Image (tube, rainbow, N blue to C red):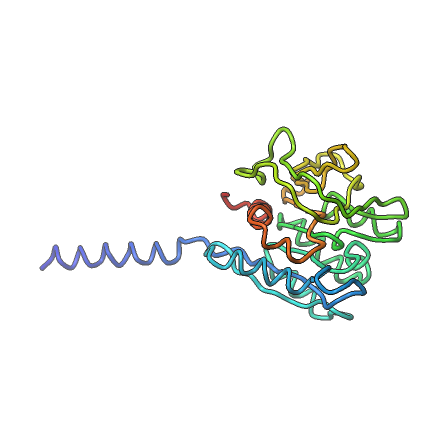
Length: 249
């Protein structure tokens, strides 16, 4: 009887250890917006972040929250502060980040505690020069200013050399998309994927291990919503976001 009680105590202690010792899932905030002035089927921000949430739903290490950040988005800073990582897919996102000081402060705090930051397509953009530098401090690359470059091309997309862990398992493939390229970059940014544009390899996806200990990832494609159907795009996006959250790929 004594040994039975001892065995039950051991089993109870093991159960408690497993329950409380398991690492909590990473809280990932997926930020989209309503339509801008682009045609249907392009710049589908909400449909895009919902698609990404679907790609990640089977991974129990991640808990996603999809939000629509239109207008003042007054609850945004609090949502950011309660997250371990963020994906930004909005219109003219570099300008958007600086539009509200509380919003930018919340993003900077997320970065300072090692949070993961990911950005897609126009989410990395600004027509004006002013928001470029603040955005670079967070994400490492920006499609900004009057000299920004972009094209709709049918191109080969391939992993950069040397290959980054985000590109693990990906091979070169052909597709049609609008890519931003010749991005403004900070020192230390690593190319992840490159597209052939006018015969030259141009960086369209990058990774940055920030000085604050966090990680940032961006991809300038996904202008066309149908490209979410490409298995290579799905793999790239999943691996990029998981990398920013410091989860094994």
